[in-house]
Length: 249
Image 1 (tube, rainbow, N blue to C red):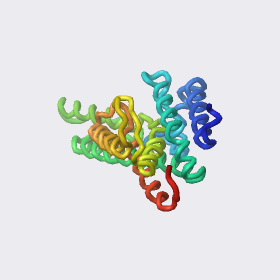
Image 2: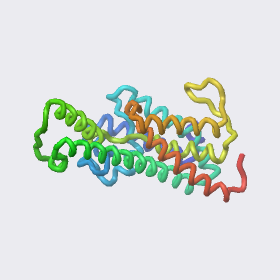
Image 3: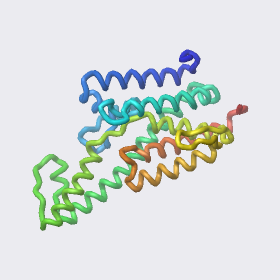
Image 4: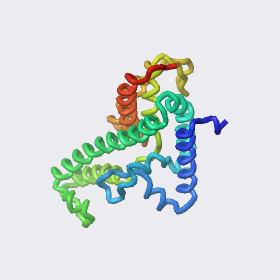
């Protein structure tokens, strides 16, 4: 059965599984953190993380860690082979990785906006943010209420700097969005929707919900805007390539 999966999709699934096993059971958490995707202005960021984060998933030590990679690989297995066959290996590979890059960019663009907002609020409260980010010890200033606000803002800043982005979800959302663009009348079922729906109706709903959760901060630790970034890239590429594909099944 596994041998029937086209080579690029099969290779991506294998690499994800190998990366998951190695980073969870060998040199954890050092290797896990080195390959996960941190905010680009965080001291934890390394240039290779732009690519390697696509093969990382939630740690098995976290709740739902195993389900994260399982759901992603099942989704890729469901949609990837069709696109690999219709687009060809080269375009399919471009689709996957450029969607992953789009996910990383949009997610961190929003992080950048949030960092600027937090930084401005801290500066208005008299806190020396630049000294703090450089590693210096900085004392809180002002009254008790101001200090509480500063602590809350620093907690938010610390989460952005120290929480990595992991998972193939952004790249896979690009694959799913491309599928929806090329095969809009195909019907699929989702876990929480018991009836089949045409993908051209389902995908916009998923995107709108993801935007809301990502912007509102109610994402529950899920990088929803990364999903949106990947889907946007997948949609754009599929729209471009659709003009040159002569046949759709």
